[in-house]
Amino acid sequence: MSNVLNEGLRAGDLEDLVYPVFEVDKFKSKMGQDADVCTITFQAKDRYPAKDMMEYVEKTFPFVLDADVASGENEKGEYSIFVEVERTDELAENISDIIYGLRKVTSIKDWKFRYYKDKQFKSATLENLKDTVPSNSKIYENKMRKYKEDELKEFFNKTVLDDLVLENEDTIIIKKPFGVEVRLQKVSDQNILETNAPAIDDKATSEIFWLTKVLGDYSINKFGDSFLFNNGSETMLVKRI
Image 1 (tube, rainbow, N blue to C red):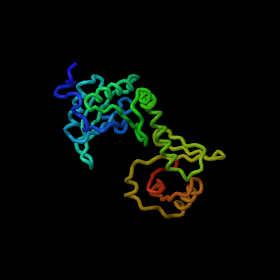
Image 2: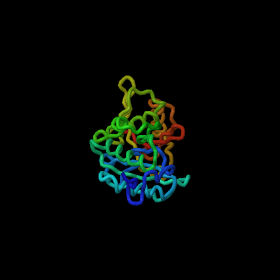
Image 3: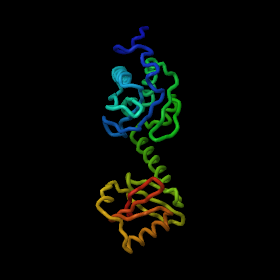
Image 4: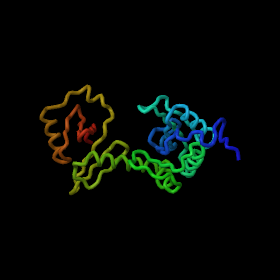
């Protein structure tokens, strides 16, 4: 069998030029909705191996929708390679096929991957990919909602709660003991902070006191009809609904 794997690219040509890890669904898709398209991100040590790897993946695997190299380097001079694949029942197998091909050109035998905002890397086995990477839009949306709910629970870690549920992307339902429920809506328009001074009237003071009493010892300020919660270095702008 010839060692030529692609136009101008031979077995081992990218040895020691690519990192043995990749990330899945960390970045948004350019080719479609994130629920329908999976993004896979690799890291090369320089621009030229990144370009070679991108071209190899794009020309070798017909199921790849798009492959691209980051327009600029990171602080270490490294370049990211972005690969997009349709989210189907064969997604885990398709990722495995890409890794199988990359083993030849990089000489990397043991690949690891990390999903979305997970902190730990896993071995890139077919079983782990099937267990971790959503293979359709419904599974993806449910998984993203769970990540977001966990992030919200971490932010509201001073609150005694029975449960926290995220509804309709931006509606936070905080369920406290004895049937007490607080509904908040996340506010994305940060201009509110620039166009309004912190409210210091009696109504604002009363509302802030109630929120602190019910939700916990957060630093809270009111801007217009929105409340800015501070928990350490993290902030969140919400409305009561």
